Each structure stands twice: as structure tokens, then as C-alpha cells.
Image (tube, rainbow, N blue to C red; front, side, top):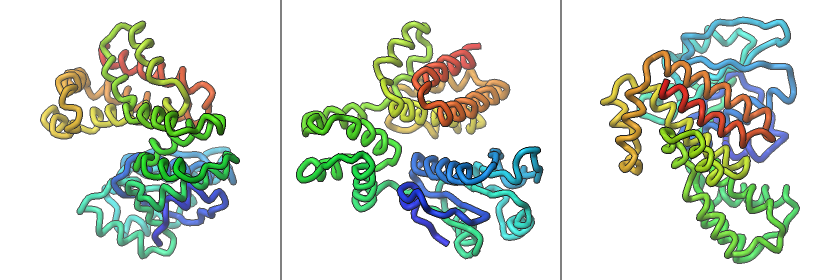
Length: 312
């Protein structure tokens, strides 16, 4: 069965009652949001732990002392087929598969689409209709009344990527109503468009300089989310690429000015350092999820620890 990702985010009473969830598409921030949201919804209603594995082939059923089952987050669909799905169907665990779109996964998506105990969730950049739904929900929850030109200005200008849109809305709806004007909205939207990825490129600076750059760009907990998203993507690219040639090809075109810097960073990473980096990402995600009030400090600590691993 196919499921609308926006429905999962906006409908707090939405029931998740399937064994398998296959989250795909080309919008990474929405894919990440949906996987997190599904896990959070399960954890609110029962005592359930989570575990991450690279592929279904790494799965081993195991019950802990204090939970009846686990949510297994699987980073790709390698090895997935009808036979292995049927083999794990009798376990008590819940399975969430995460895989960006490609021609290779079309057959696998059809498996989940036709399976009665599965949800297929496709995550693409937000269209105008989706942005209207999200904006209306955020306005409802904030208790503010935003209408007319300002409302439609937001619909047109909000980012098509979910996490960036969410961060912007949290900033805007945190303002007093009298401060929600065209001039302030333009300033906020331009601020978001500048991004936080440039903080990562201060990695080789002295710690004091890194702190200054970080504090200039990362001011709110929403900023931390955007900053962490960029840094995680840069780190994941380092971890996933087997050699410099592969890494060079996967560096986004818009980062052409920073290409030499990124390649130099990649050259410093041994398999041992990659494992340390992966462990750091996982630990930071858990902290950011549980301790929102400490997110600003956690984001800075994350960056300094990346530097420590890189130059060690």
C-alpha cells in the first residue's frame, strides 16, 4: 500500500500498523524526517528499541530484557526479495527500509506495494499543494492568523525540501504577529537560503575560529538541524566512497570552489577513521533527538569532534 509522507507528519493520530515500511524517493530531508517520525510514533505507544543495520542480510532476531520487539532501520535495500521478506515476516520486529530512488529498486518497490503488511512511502520535493497543507497545519498549531499576500508569499517562497521549510516556519511562527511582515520574511528566507554548509569548511581553522564561525551561522535549534543535515551528508559521502575517484565524482557540482578542500579531507580517512565518524554521527543524532535544549552545544561539539577525527 502506498502512503502519503505528508499525512504521516501532519496527522498525529495516524496509525502505523504494518510490519514493513519502505521509504524511498529523491528528497533526502523528507526521507530522514519520515523514518524518524515513524520511529517516534512507535516509541510513544510502546516500549520499543531501535537498531540500525546496513542491509537485511545483517539482521539477527534478538529480544532484549526490557522490550518485546525492535524497530530495525535498514540503510539500503541490498539483498531484499520476496524470499527474505517472508523469512523475517514471523519475527516480532518492525522493519524500516530507506533507499533513494534508482532504476534498480523498481522491482523491490513493487514487492512492498503489493504486500498487505507493508507501506511504500515515496518522498519527493514538496509541490505547492503539499506546502499549503504544511503551512496551514503550522499556522493552526501556532494560533496565529496569517492571510492574504503574506500567506501566498510564504507558499511561493518556502523551500521545496521539507527540513528547510520546517526550520523556516518555526522561525517565522516564533515571531510576534506584528513582526510577521514582508521585510522580515524576506530577511528570514534569505538567511535560510545562505545555508549552514559553509561552517563545515572551517574544519581546518583553530578551534576558537571555528566557534566564532559556528556561532555566527547557527543561532537556533532549527539552525542546528540544518547544519547537522549538511555535515552528515558530507560525512556520509566520505564513509560510503571506497576510493578518491568515486568520491570525486559524487561531490555536488555547486561545491566546485570547495572541491580541493573536500578531497583533502577524504584523503585523511582510513577505514578506522570512517568507523569513528559513523559512530559520532549516530551518537549525535541520539543526543539531538532527546535533548533539544542542548542542541546548540551538541552541534558545535559534533563539528569539533569531526575535526579531531579528521586530523588525528
